Each structure stands twice: as structure tokens, then as C-alpha cells.
Amino acid sequence: MASLVQELIEAGIHFGQRRSNWNPKMAPYIHGVRNQIHIVDVRESIKGLLLAKRFIEKTVGQGKDVCFVGTKRQARGPIEQYAADVQMPFVTERWLGGTLTNFRTIRERLKRLDELDRLVESGEMKNYSKKMESQLMRERKKIQRNLGGVRAMTRLPGALVVVDTNREKNALLEARSLGIPTVCLVDTDGDPDLVNIPIPGNDDSMRTIDVVIRELCDAVKKGKEGRATSAGEAPGAEGGDGAARGEGRGEGRGEGRGEGRDAAGAPRRRSSRSRFRADGDAVATTEPTEGA
Image (cartoon, rainbow, N blue to C red; front, side, top):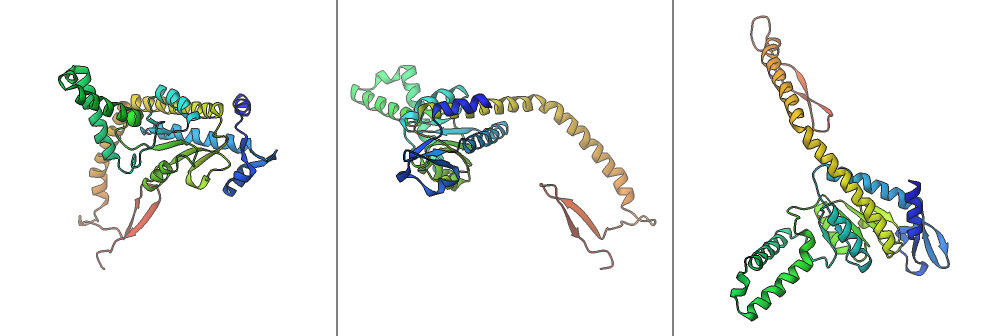
């Protein structure tokens, strides 16, 4: 923990924007002002980063993916490097409107990219005229540039990791409309209300972005390890559940029927019973007795 704090401070995570260019909503995360530049409270940055790591690890462990978004020049390198290492989707070139809200159309464009790739790999592209071949190659290059990072994303992500709320506002609004949780590195000129888990800090420093994305991708790795462990234990767990189900059925069919009849052998109805919701709370439901 101490080494992480030292690394973040050396990366300059505490340097915010100029005092004249701040967002008042970031006041709780600002420690003070130095030379007309806001200084971010590093304790708040660490708190947000640790909270984001726990959330991402839990999300990935549940079998969901995390999409990393950062189209500014400082964020492209770290996101492409670390997100590709953990095999997570990312957007670093340009956020196309409807990437989440119109995901079906995005998948259709990716199918088109697969078709063009097959033409190139099979050599059928050479059968077209020079003009048509040039047009198809330009189309392939454009789709690859804009959507190459989300090519393996066959469903909506479980969470969105964003760098700079001002630049990626469209992505955050789309995620909010679909109820997708968001994690964001927010500078002092950003709006933390657009994000579920803000990480206050300098979003213009390449070193800061590198450290934050690296830590979040480490959480992705741990989540994947937990996912693999759960998959390995699934067969045994299912067998145990099956045995429990069998015992439960036998008890319900034998003892339950005996207890549900009176001395004359007639069915006996209870005046009330309890059922359980998915959250575990008991809810009493009243049923009319026979005399009612």
C-alpha cells in the first residue's frame, strides 16, 4: 500500500486543474490550492482506487467483462497495453454514438469486418477490380480503427472504466441510460455525479493514467482467477446440491405428507405460512382456513 501511494504521488496524481477552471462538485476531493492550481486529496484518490478495484474484481468474478474507454492521447497507450493483456474490450480511437445503446448495429459492423478479413485471408480480394479492392480495404481499415478494441465484446459490459469525464461524456451517458456501473479517473474540472465510483486525480498525466489502469487491470486478473476457481469447483458443488435436493424431496414427500393430515386422515391446511424472497427476508402470507 505504501509503495502504491508513493508511486501515485511521484506520478503526479495530486495535481489538478487551475483554480479558475474547476468544477465546484469536486470540492470534497480537493485538499487545497498551490500556485493557483488545485491539489487533490491523495487519501480520496486511494480510497476511490481501492473501491474501484474491489468492484471490478467482483464484477469480473461474476463472469462479466469490463470495457476501458480513453480516447485522449495520454490514455491510449496504457489502455491498449493493459486491457489487451487481460483480454478486455477497449475504445481508444473514438467513441461512436450508440456503441452501447445501439449495440446490435455495432455487432453488424463487426460482422462486416469479419467478412472483409475472410476476403483478404482467402485471397478473394484479388478477384475484384483495383478500385473496388481499394474501397474495401479502406472500409476494413476504418472499421478496424474504430471498433477493433470491442471486436470480442459479444454482449454489453458489466462495467465501464473511463479516463476524463469531460471527454468521454457520451460514453458515460450511454452507460447511465443502460444502468451500467462506471469507474472514472476524474480531474478537478470533471463532474463526479456522472460516475458511480470516481477516482479523483490528474487525468492529463500519462504516468498517473498508467498506474491507475495497471492497478484496475490487476483487479481484472484477480477476478478472472476467481472465475476460473469457481468454474473448477462447480461440478462438485452441483453434486452436493443435487444430493441435498434429493434428500429434500424425499423428506418433503414422506414426512411432509404425514404432517399435513389430521387424525382422520383428511388434509389439514395451515392458517399461515412463510415464504422467502431472493434477498432472504421472510414474508408472511396468510391463507384462509377451511372454516373461512
